[in-house]
Image (cartoon, rainbow, N blue to C red; front, side, top):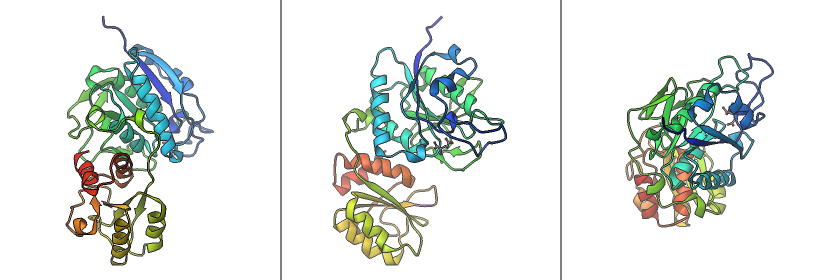
Length: 330
Ligand code: GLU
């Protein structure tokens, strides 16, 4: 009989740590009120999967997460993974920005050990809550050696997603998460079944380490529309190092903003054309002469995750060609 793996379960808040006044409160409740040990204690059979240690790192909704929160989580998970008696880490997290934290970990952890970020759409107190099963599934995924070397994973709604691709796509349904190319696999009866692997480099194969990061540069995201006022761009250019411009369609820029964005790029702001459509590739030098204007393009990455990638890339280079290479590689 093989020994059970040792997992650390980190609590950060969110709905998975929430409580409603009544079981019918599936969407209106207080989030981030239950301790992670309390949440864990309510999962039947969790002890059968692994030796579990709970740790409360944060206790807040993930809509509040700034760069400092990412750095705190990254450093702590990295330190845990470096311990020989830790086989994997599960992070219980609010679902709102789970994709950003997971992608940050995916790009900055220097370990092949399983790392699973998990949340729930309904608090443990609600009718048909997904909290217990999602957490159980996350433990099962983190406990399985098949999950090694895949980077950070997000487990929700019976599915295992790569942190690179997953995003929250619905505000209240249990089936809130999706990846444009599908999940990596399913969890069935507490057993992960994988059908594909991440194609892009992550964790050990990136130049960024959570341990070495003291701060992240300011990068902002703008959701574009035809009437968007140039003052928004000017304000960002005044104090940020990067701007993810979530343009219409294929990252299109309204005529009134071409000049301001070109000037901002000439002034040193790293402008990245992305799309507000939620999926697809933004074609470089397609609708706009990106090379001539000094703009970058996002490949297929969503604006909120492009922000994470650009912040990391800017910690090592300001060279537009090197920054573009990061978007094309990761
Ligand atoms: N807004 C809260 C958060 O992201 C609750 C959402 C959830 O966890 O489902 O932490």
